[in-house]
Image (cartoon, rainbow, N blue to C red; front, side, top):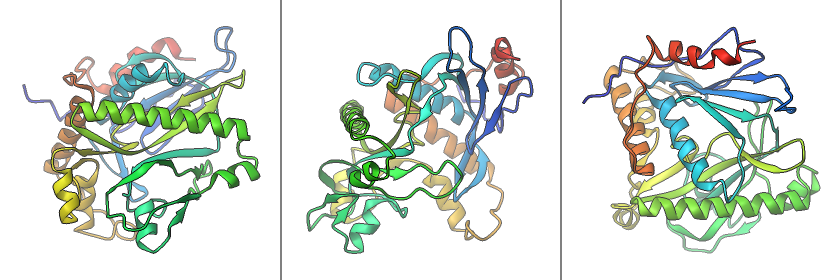
Length: 325
């Protein structure tokens, strides 16, 4: 049965919920402390917005549900490796999580020489750098080749909307961003999560290339995994079939990502300077299909869109009514 592409969630603005914070993709609300949750809780609603080039491009039907349910699958799989912030899933697009003190370091784990952004390792390697993020990379690596071992390439977490900056382990400790013990625990947890994720992905015919993790402290000082984990938005996945050929020819490996829509935009304007043309319905549909395919391939489960409620926002409002102030 074709999936209905007329239902989308461009935003989740719910005035009855307290202390809103609206991000690029998620609309969040902070619940006050209670007897059961003295630190308070946060409602994280994944909208269908898709962002690139520091702007919102469109709303992609079912993207929010895909991200939430993909993260839920991974949170359930990895709870024994690292406890996480989740306390409830009242709706397919919604996570209720503990309020944590988010650590000021974003932990990016990379298994391959890949990427295009200023914080990625491939552009820096091609520019001649070999000491990157405190790691010494060998000579002779090809674009998109596997690294000798997975490495952590941390960046500062810009809470004020600024740009993330590359860090090394020594800089993290010297600046007092984390204690040595905290960094050791975060590093061990991140590498264990990534190793688990790579093995699971390999069993599904995928390569988990790199990913980012966000950690926070609860009131007792315990380190918990926050935000999301191993979703198509936070991670780079390549399709294993076709990777070797791409590596040999220097082509870009087949992947699950936002390049379907990014490439369309870049072909028509400079997205950092020009007004972006309206994304056509065909591109919206293709991008939605990529996200749904990613969910089904990663988890091995069939994607079942939640069609209840007059609209997705109406459904979410009804499911979150118990949390209204």
